[in-house]
Image (tube, rainbow over all chains, first blue to last red):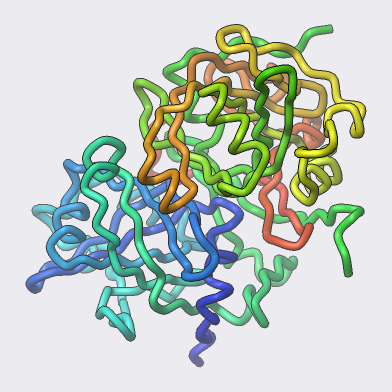
Length: 193
Length: 193
């Protein structure tokens, strides 16, 4: 059963608005990689743009520079161990997809490898080259060109965190392998219905 | 009782590593302001640097440009209503500190107004002028020059999310006044002790 449905590009920023730790996927010339990134954020609603910090020493950065594209996959709580593992090793000499037994689908626009099993959502992004910020802050900007989410936790443009979808709830890295889970929805009193 | 203690600058990135929604504070020429920002991230550990998206139409942006400084305060769950309120109105014609009855302390290095009551932590930042990214992506970079946290939830360089400090646990904006709370610590199996 395919539980992933496309997300309107105008809603893509909502997938990362609350600051989850993400997996950055990349591919070029027959090689592919996946790493964890705690440091990402949206920067624009329309067109949907995001920023993500990818250290210039990483293999991911090399693949992203070569292909001009990357994927952002949002792991659920069941992928805590995987997230930490792919964030603690380099893919330069190892195919982390093979080692971790990961299946991926090819992104619909740019062909980036995108993870769905255990993930809440993904965004496929075209790199917006910004040499200075890439050099000075390892900060890479991208435009989201496709997005999808598991309809069990993101539907009709909104996250729905419920007790029955705890496995898909997002994780947020505190550091050193300790994560917190998003949950316990709070509603501001002044928010309109 | 003052429950805030200084945080080593080398640990400052940990305060925002997990993607909380923050309050951006600013002051210049006798005016001050506070707004909410869901879009921020660390970009470097040492020196500790962060990026935050501040729309160029906001009064905050005007004050930050004039003073070359801003504060980042991290609200706990008890400040959900305040966070949404200060994120939904402009401070150009209103002193939001006065309207919301907010008390602040002056930042130790740059004199930014910093909130402690109800907040888990704060960071005082010096703007790193980057005209292009400010213009193109509303993305402002800053270097953290001072930081402090409530020792009931951040101690010895680490967050400690426990049932007894739920009020100080961080909030993460999903959109439209809906927030999730960080909690339920998960530990990656491969993480060292």
